[in-house]
Length: 251
Image (cartoon, rainbow, N blue to C red; front, side, top):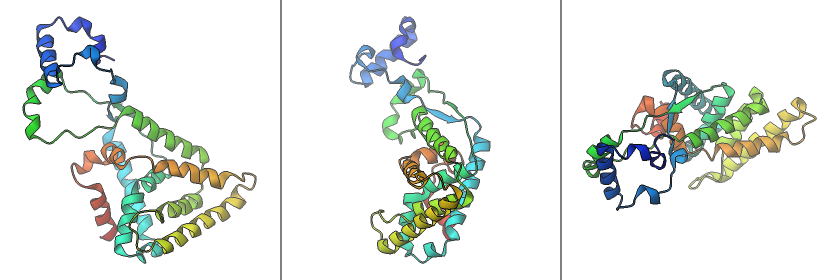
């Protein structure tokens, strides 16, 4: 890794590099680079290669996700507080299912790192400024793409997508729900409908239902910050994505 200080012995002879390195080491409490663990791979940050195309496709998927929720009468029968709790908890896996269904693919590239000189010059101002926003890491994006690829291998039908979205949306385990028993009944109904549609489509695959639910559970492990920073931050800036989604839902 070109940015790793462990492999930059040839650069340390430069006067500027030496001065900046000493300044950095002083701000880190005097630790020398030799005693610091190299975390280049883990810290490698990425961004979309074609943000104007991918962000537009992601926005279209988000609109369709909100439309799906809008068109569910059983969802609108819930208390407004429960609707917002379910929205906050489930918008990411529902959005990811939409990416899979719409066959949205994307590529990332490594984000340019700020120079050491810039870090030193801004070091004195950092105490009076908000910390920089964390960027998506390559490892996190690769995990996301792995989840999407696994879903694509299932080759779900439109009905399977619809009932699976219902089973994900009506999650009775979300803390603070007032109508958790009713939501649990809605989830069972969606799961039962999914099982019924699987039987004629895949009569030979008895384990497909359990496999679909298992793979769907991996979507919940994808952090909302990753999805927001990767697909929506270039569009919405510092705005709260959940507040924007709620506004779209109730407009």
